[in-house]
Length: 525
Image 1: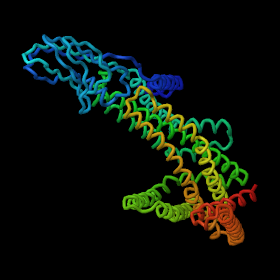
Image 2: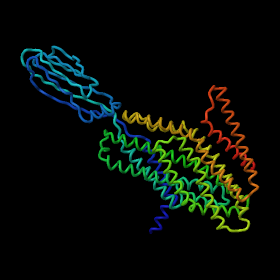
Image 3: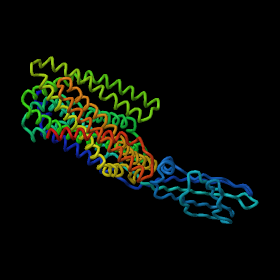
């Protein structure tokens, strides 16, 4: 019975039904709330006696809902009118107190009836007796406030359906395919496009399937917990559609959805490049011979053991980076430390991997095969350096789309003014993030080029003749680096009439390294 249910949950029909339900929930959420106009009415009636030449201050009635809309969400107020009716037994004068100023409304009247528009919450009326005898006053005041309100019942239900089904699909994908949803889809596409050497690809992909667990599974879990807690805390408040909690929860859900879409888009881009590079690596290894595929499969099995060693080192690096950020170190110092430490961590992990390979594949011709495998490994890292630049290029081209997406989802007319201003700040913040990514493009690429040169240098331990090839690449690097710096200097000096700026140094270094990588790749092709 239980096994039957498990087979049903793993079946394609059930997962397809969940996918349709997820898209339906997303559509309900993106459709937005039901908006309508609602009148809030508050009235008061009073009868009193004024002494000769006396006066009395009368407050204009105001309900809590009216005060909420006039103070917090005044941009949603469509009409604010106060109906005043006053009967006096003798002539009286009527004033309005508005922003600490007095405005005369009527003088020497026995009856007054008028609609006053846009009265504030602190505005008051003053009735003054003009006669030398007492007089009776009857006053009736009614405030009518018309505001735009939104009912978020259906959108919030759709959001919960979307997050719940998305999380369910992720867990079913892990159980059925041992990979996340995006990873399993990309794997299936890769296997259909290239059915050769599927076993070798599968070993590698299973070893690297965990890279998408944090953005694809942990993030939706966090979203779901936040949503459930918000509903538990504000559940009763949401039943009142004029409560501000409904607007805040909808805005939070839209922020969460934007970050989820961005993270998933990032995973798709990285996953596609990963598939292309690993497929190219398998194809190159196959052309070299079965011995190289055997080393590749053994390396894939060692990834978990390698991760156990590299993760503590990376954790130490993250702690050090956090300390530097807390103590206010400059971004240049932090990036410089990362650029220096990344090849060190990679060299330690790669050294341990070679030692374990020598233990598990002990044979006479192993060193010669290992040199060829390491050279292919270096070329794969070179592809990743170029792929990182390509990923940045993709994100740069997608900046207008992401900016329009955030504007369309966060700058909505039915939001209160303070949430609308918050949306404007987040839209500008998204643009600032992409600007920062563009500024960090060169340093991040330099972090990835470190392992490439470490691998090339370590090949010299097993093949002495490889030193001449490495020296040729170093010569290419310095030549391209020198030309790049010279062109930067001449452009700054002759075109912009500015002195040499050392800030262009990382860009020239990256250009030189990329030229060396391209030279190595083109020589192989």
